[in-house]
Image (cartoon, rainbow, N blue to C red; front, side):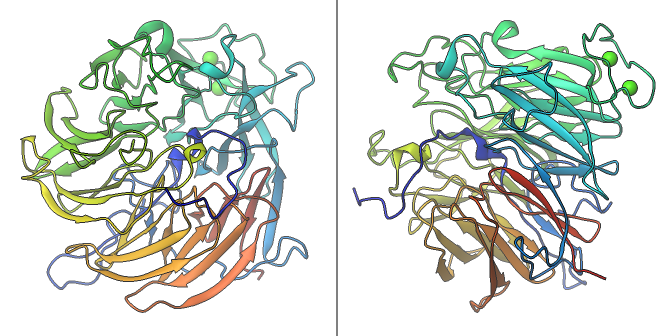
Length: 489
Ligand SMILES: [Ca+2]
Ligand SMILES: [Ca+2]
């Protein structure tokens, strides 16, 4: 195996999962339609929309800024020391996961996972929810990793997965609306900066999940259901699976938090952990939830019933874990009846070979062969999520190469080396591709078949997140700060 070109700092993985994007196109020669744009100016979930394609119709986002001189920096808010959750924007607020090293409340001290809410316009801190670490330690809840999932906001409700493997539904207005929303009304902390809980679902308790190192799934909603991966995995021996009967994916009623369906097709074949995050979209006329799981397979389910429709193995049959058989950490992207997904490994495992696929998800059963539209093996291990815009697909790999391919054929047009590990994913907006890296650089390239670098800015510390566009502002967190970037008027 090739020696790592980049220094992989000491930290496990999980967090990323929340980090990626996409776009699209157009049917029939009509003007381009970016079907994956949220359409509201908000960015209410990981990926912006349930198909997780990180593309946006927004115009006028900044293409240059300087975090030192504050040029085009609208505001900056301090986060904890490690921030793997990706920001989302909705209801005039920005929500992001981090740890408790920027402690906002002395009554809630020590290492915790923290979800913070800020005012979108000013960066004013509004409220937080914190979670102590699990007593089982790094086996299930790695120190200082904080909240590693991206929240999802629908109306006034916010959903996310905590470091303790609990799915939470909160009121985005907290107690600032003067009302304790239920059914849960017995919160211990009810001040203006505390979270108002609506319901919670403990995946370790309720479905027996044993998260490997961290729970990180970013929820997605369809109808009355909210879907998450359980992160069920191996224990610290990296051999034993304590909970082989726990599901890989669950569907909860979004109003009550009650379990509606679950699936465990993986059983005892988990290679390591399960850190991918599900997507939802209409494929071949059927509303599907698509989930990449711990055996390196991707599975599609009928969203409302949980009926398994298809499954696809992302590894060559002769591959061997962990040498060249991979897990899947990036998020599946759904675009025009196809599913796009790359595989890779925990960053702690370093670099290695990877695979990127375009899958025809209208097929049924084991579609590893029948559903393979194309396969690209020039990618290295990747934990990123593709973006698709104007017929082109963009995806970085963990070795730091950004690949631009024809989305229909898999033909490669160009690659670009950012010379640092990439945990996040691309955002395609206004004819440009934005991508951050572990050295803290954000590169902006021209979208299109010809490679052209437009600029590069450094954020002051590692960027594991993916840029998020909302109302003309670009929100981006580095390891410990959240920036709102906008062209000064
Ligand atoms: Ca409330
Ligand atoms: Ca409440």
